[in-house]
Length: 110
Image (cartoon, rainbow, N blue to C red; front, side, top):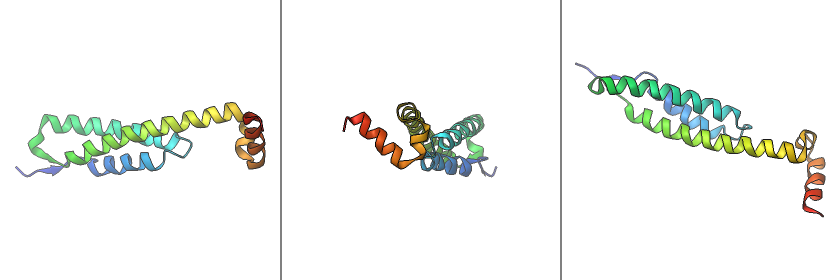
C-alpha cells in the first residue's frame, strides 16, 4: 500500500511559522493562526494515529504544532502588553508619538 501525505501537513507547518511571525500584529493574528494550527494539527494527529503506516508528513505536523504553541504564547504576551499600555497611557497616546512621550515622562516622573 502506498503512503500518502497527511492532509494539511504543509499548511500546519506554514501556519505555525506565521503564528510566530505575526505575533506583533497586536497579538490577534498570531493568536488566530496559532489556534487554527492547533485544531488542524489535532485532526491530522488523530488521522495519523489510527493508521500511521498510511501517511507521511507527520514531522511537519509535530513541528507546526510546537511552533503554534510558541506563536500563541508570544501573541498572548504581546496582547497583554498592548492592553496594559492602552490602560496605562490611553488609546490616544498609542496613536500619537508625541503624546506617548509626554505620558511616559509623566509616568517616570521627569
